[in-house]
Image 1: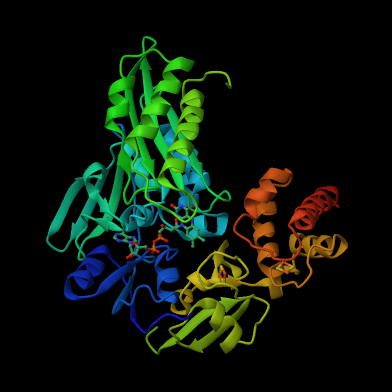
Image 2: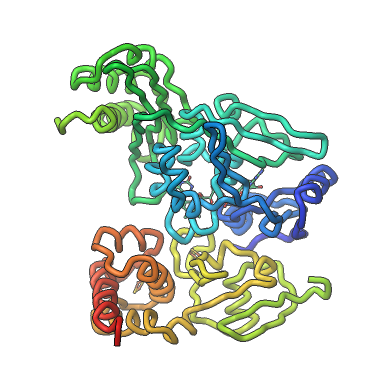
Amino acid sequence: MKSPDFSYVRATSLDEALAMLADSEDAVILAGGQSLVAALNLRLQAPELVIDINHIPGLDRIELAEGKLRIGPLVRHAQLMASAEAARALPLIAQALPHVAHPAIRNRGTTCGSLAYGDPAAEMPACAVALDATLVLASRDGTREVPARDFYDGLYETRRAPHEMLIEARFPAAPEGARAMFAELAVRRGDFASLGLAGQLHLDAGAIAAFDLVAFASEPAPHLLTGVAELALGQRPDARLAADLAQAVAEAVDPLESPLATPAMRRRQYRALAERCLRDAMELADA
Amino acid sequence: MPDDLIRFTLNGRRIAVPSTRGHLGDLLRHELGETGTHIGCEHGVCGACNVVMDGRVTRSCLTLAVQVDGAEIETIEHAGNDRCGAALQDAFVARNAFQCGYCTPGMIMTARELLSENAAPGRAEIRDAISGNLCRCTGYQAIVEAISDAAEALRETADD
Ligand SMILES: Cc1cc2nc3c(=O)[nH]c(=O)nc-3n(C[C@H](O)[C@H](O)[C@H](O)COP(=O)(O)OP(=O)(O)OC[C@H]3O[C@@H](n4cnc5c(N)ncnc54)[C@H](O)[C@@H]3O)c2cc1C
Ligand code: FES
Ligand code: FES
């Protein structure tokens, strides 16, 4: 299909983009366009004004400072994937990015665009919730910071107001020895997942000192599994623990009905997926 | 676009066309008659519309025509002009890596980027690279073999 009619402007500075966002009733930001232009073509969205931010200088920076990795709004998925610094600081993101769409889409699609859009099946929002990232939102009136853990309300619903732009995602760098947990079920690599798990654990003197795990894609928004974390903390990793935690994951998730699987089937899929990714993260041999 | 023209470089030629609200794929095909770029789904899923924009493979259906003002675009019409594109075209013919040919332009644009970054990709890497390109005819095996053959041919002739 073809997109509906809209006005297009190319912003040349952040202030200009924020002023246009504030002045229009019905404006949207165009970042990578990999979700927005698809939605326009399908006529799922019909904004009055499309504000192209791709020509604003300085928005494509990845910076590591004071233990935080800062990702600017024009950092493409492919650029983040190619950054050795980002891969060291955020092993979970490094593991998840190859599952985000396909090369041509990663060349254009931005990580902040994905975080702002809040697709329930997207990997980056799940990673941001797991890693307790901070999202920096700017408007003409100033900036505010929202923890990713408070940002996602439901299907494509976030705490971002229409006149706000996500100008930075700030992730705490993983502590030495942190291990990523990531697994998803998708028809093909790069397709949106039907269910997935993203998280990180950290051992101290052989016991689990930090454990954050998020279920995504099967529910309207990323779901931080706090009950599972309580069971994991202080325990020593072994096969028995992996199996118990996988069972706890299956009980904690609340999967929606889908044409492909009943909630009961999805819980079983979660248990298998969780056991696999927990064993990997705990570096246990295959069952 | 002060005068409402979109100015860009297409396959090395400077172009100026009246602004349209559609996507780049339609601009290429309808306004400029460059029909090598194929349009399948118009929502990013099939990859038939892949072109190179400012050096990176890009979905032309997910790029607004107005976005290419000032950009450099390369399409399948131009891809055979370099060693890598030509090697891929030869290998696709030799391996019968297309039947209807609808997916082929997008496959070649995608494979060309893969081979520019990785001179000796394994079968799994090739499959991963073309995961965003759908083919309804071949079952992919011949395409994977063709890309692998092209990589080998390019390695063999690398220093001549
Ligand atoms: C075939 C296909 C498969 C895909 N598969 C996956 C997948 O498996 N996993 C996955 O995670 N994603 C997938 N994607 C989506 C892709 O990752 C998108 O690029 C990403 O979700 C959105 O980023 P973008 O920069 O393209 O945003 P755009 O499309 O430009 O924008 C998307 C929305 O977010 C808003 N927005 C963008 N940036 C900002 C900002 N800085 N501040 C405020 N609002 C903003 C826009 O206004 C728009 O409403 C897929 C896309 C396609 C077409
Ligand atoms: S037409 Fe662009 S991806 Fe299908
Ligand atoms: S050859 Fe027909 S779609 Fe690939």
